[in-house]
Amino acid sequence: MNQPFQPLAYFRMLRQRWLLILIPFVVALGVAVVLSALSPLRYTATATLVAPKPQLVWRWDNNVYDVVDLRFDWRAEVMPLIMTDNLAARALEKVENQLDTALSPAQLLHATQSKQGGGSLFTLSVRAASAHDAALLANAMAASLPEAVADYYVGDQNLYDQALAEAQVQFDQLDQQLVEFRGQTGISLGFNGDITARGDSELFGAHSEIKQELTLVNSYRAALQTAINRLDMVLQSAESSGTLSLTLLDIPELQTYIDYDALQILRQQQGDEALIVTLKELRQRMEADLQPLQESALTTQSETARQLQIMDTILRDRGVWQESVVTLKRKQIEMEMKRIIEGARIKIVDAATVPAAPSQPKWLFNLLIAGMSGLLAGLFLAVAAVYLSETEA
Image 1 (cartoon, one colour):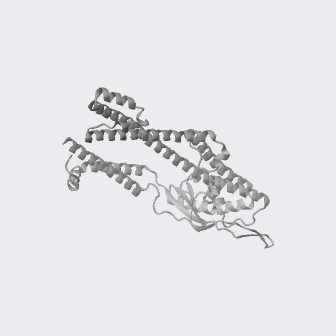
Image 2: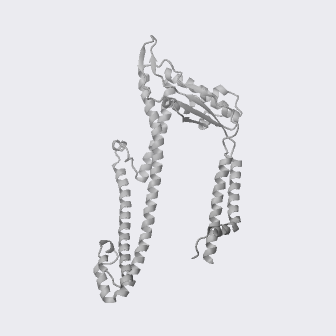
């Protein structure tokens, strides 16, 4: 154990334990192969669309009626319509009996995803059990979207109300999830101004209590560490010079364990040598008390960071749906004042093609992750075995 570290010798010892490295690697790959083989095949086809920003809106008499704000992203109005039963029903009507596997509108929505791209582009992806169905459904959804958007702009209030209600439901669910999370953890929205309008004084108090508790733990830990440092200085001075500088121990941080006057009395009664033994025992006890404080502080900090990360995720998702709700409500006011004449605002840039390979399971990704995990586990076992063998030797 006292010999200098030799990388080549250590590597040879690891190589002698190649079986410990190989077994976890093979087991991990086997598990990945079994799970990937049991996963059903899924194909994903993607269509690219564009929602260009109109610059002018015209009357029938060809006079300029309004100037549209170019800063507004029209995708905010279009994309919520993708996740509506009406659009799924339209797409299924287009494909009729051409599908290899029949789907319901709810199943089609569950297999559909949308994502914003650069500029005014966005994509619409559909996952299906066969490549033919994936491409067929993606193109049907893309072809039905301009029709649904046109109906929406022409004034189909039922379709609009349905989209608004669904967006509102999503926002309400996330908002309730946020309220429940804050109620359970005591973490409030203290980082933005919305909290003042919501009136959550109790949550502010709970969050302050968590901070206060962590502050007290850290303060007590720092005080205990200061007292230990003073004891170390006194003991080191006694070893080097043979004298005890008890004046260094006249600090408030040490009063919890032993009074300064009591130290003076012990010194008179027992002498310096016995007092040094007492101080060493006291230091051991303080060191034992310091360890759980450090672990408690680290645990509290880690838990607080985890909770804040969860809250940020909820806030981000909630903000997306809140923006959709605000946008749709704003459009509702506009629709009461005027009817939009032209509704064709969506164009298909690239139609979905039949995917050549399934998107699920991801064999290469699964095997790569499994192989890396198994290799790390095997290396850990081999290193542990080398360490244990050297310890026994």
